[in-house]
Amino acid sequence: MGRDRRVEYISSSPEDTLLIGRKLADLAVHSIICFFGDLGAGKTTLIKGFIEKATATPLDEIISPTFVYMNQYLGQEQKVYHFDLYRLQDAYEFVSLGFDDYLYSGDICLIEWSEKIAPLIPPQHISVHMAYLGEEERKITIILNEVHA
Ligand code: ADP
Ligand code: MG
Image 1 (tube, rainbow, N blue to C red):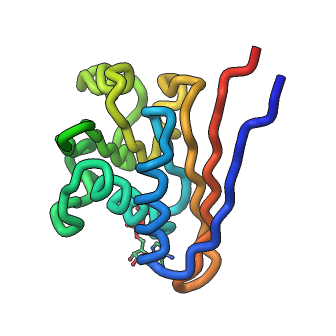
Image 2: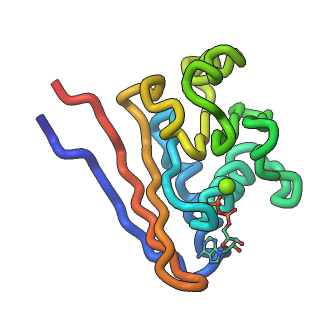
Image 3: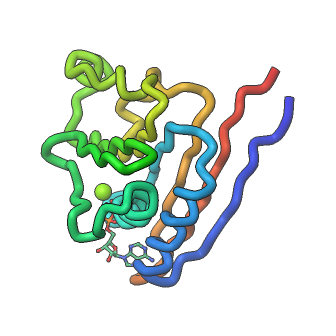
């Protein structure tokens, strides 16, 4: 058994968080990335940086899929699916909407409120934990979850 790798950042502004999102887009080794943190923690902000970098989509065209559960972005090299499951009932609803296919597509899935579909998340994934420290300060912990023999 080994230890999962983790890095921790303190972000001092939304711009900082966008930058961390762009960096993550370059480093992401797993296609499933789960985001944890309260409303306003900055999950969508980080994801915007990621999607901009990964798919060359202008920031102002990246909007939260709160009411539709999922938005997709088709870049030259990769496809990115951005989920916001805040309003989702449970994993059964996710499957009944056919969304589980995306999880196993090999394309990148950025998932807010993945707690709702915990049983469906593959053990090999990245998790990003975001916590409010102050008006513009956030703690961001990125964890590489590996499968241990
Ligand atoms: P979530 O998706 O977690 O609900 P959002 O990214 O939609 O969060 O909203 C975060 C809010 O907090 C935005 O209004 C953003 O401008 C503000 N904010 C202030 N400081 C930061 C920071 N350091 N990182 C991210 N967002 C920040
Ligand atoms: Mg959000």
